[in-house]
Length: 472
Picture 1 (tube, rainbow, N blue to C red):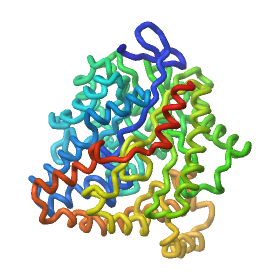
Picture 2 (spheres, helix red, strand yellow; picture 1 turned 60 degrees about the vertical axis):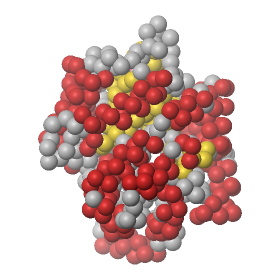
Picture 3 (cartoon, rainbow, N blue to C red; picture 1 turned 180 degrees about the vertical axis):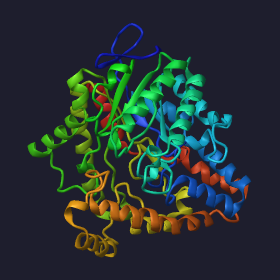
Picture 4 (cartoon, helix red, strand yellow; picture 1 turned 180 degrees about the horizontal axis):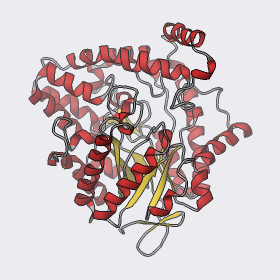
């Protein structure tokens, strides 16, 4: 074990030996996401709804048990057995302060974060602390837990001030922990000016360094960790810093333009997309970390007989991306470790209490395509197409492209607002009502559905990861 640091394009240990971090993100845990754990909308919405439905005491009991069971000793042991050595830990600022009581630290926020960091350390696994959700929302999507589509973090200074304050608290708490590889201060920013993000990074870098001069800082590119084109020479003032891309391939999702057959053209597209994201770093000899990547997978209860064929294609995308990364000796963190069956390395058995309780509701969510991530909108496309057509008919072409285009196309913007935000709002109370009448023992059993022992393993994915590590 050694405190890691950046040396040129590499991560190295105290002896200046290269360390390549390969692992996964613990998404859906201390920053819950709808497609990962099956609720609609945003985390703050379902927490409030559950408190209203069954009372705050029972609600807090359920969520605390969920956090406990989601990652335990058996998870760390399994993760390590694959040869993986790093877990990115996304967390929500709401664990550490309340909007109505800002800048007052909630010590309870450290309870599960400390526990998992220590668990990982006991299995020689580094961790990276990822602030996935900031006050006001640093990006336009559900996973920044603000409930809208405007990233208000970039237009309200106080939201930025509170985030700097929070990183000061975190740096003070973790500055001596050598099993923490580093800090990822802001996940997937979408700053429409492209310059405020750079200014904020300078602020938060200085604030962290005043307290913790040694841990690596990992800065995401703008526009969902894809764009460094406006960063200029800012890196010259940032010491011991690496730069994070998120390298999702369109071929790993239901919206793929064509079946993936690993043709020369498709392989060139994989490589071109990846190289474009890291171009700014390569021109300057800087260190790159791929903080998120990976396909999603078909499920037999929804895709039926096509499931195996679809997943064979997705596994090939996975292999081909890994081949690129291994050749470049890239550190990476695949998205994600655990979920209810869409993308995780391990996932809940359909016969667990949670999955049986929500079986019909999850089928409804899938049919309505209310989750943005990897949605199959075939059942409702006809509902939203007239609205998309209406925008095209009424808005001149030169005015249709609104940031974060081109990542969000016009159709993405319409469906984000009309489907993933609006319709989801109407489903929040329906989700919470499933818990009404449950006593503490029943709530505990539902939460225990997320234990490693209750989960199935995505063997194809895990074997590819393990084999890749052996071959690297």
